Length: 169
Image 1 (cartoon, rainbow, N blue to C red):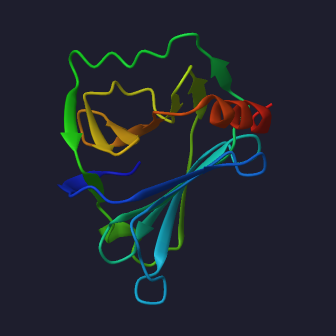
Image 2 (cartoon, rainbow, N blue to C red):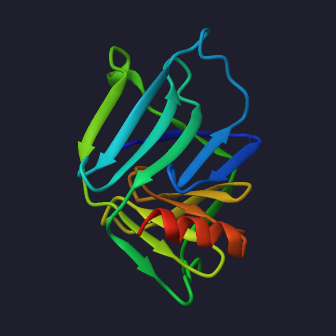
């Protein structure tokens, strides 16, 4: 799992929805020739896959790409109960020391996508969320050990939801 070591200021976010790549999110500006990207991936790698790109030297978040998921749940209301959850504004910075010689870190896991009226929660851990690092419309759900256990994309418009539902059929 990806471990968050610290938080940085919020960055610009670009979110794209597409029937071929259901969700693609890019954070800030970065130059791949100056700092390569490490990709942490989870799912079953056949019918589900999410990929999170992280700067190889800095641990900065670069991208999140949901490629596919067969475990899609449609929820009338997707209430992420925030009563007992700490909200942190900013972007997460990840522990990368043990990944430095790799380009891909693959961890088999169960990927679930919960689609609500105006948000989606992509869950890849059974761990309970205790805090959320919020950068614009993208939230990183963290467990008690600061491991990322899911991603929340909020503020989605109806056309975005429709594209996402079509892509994950």
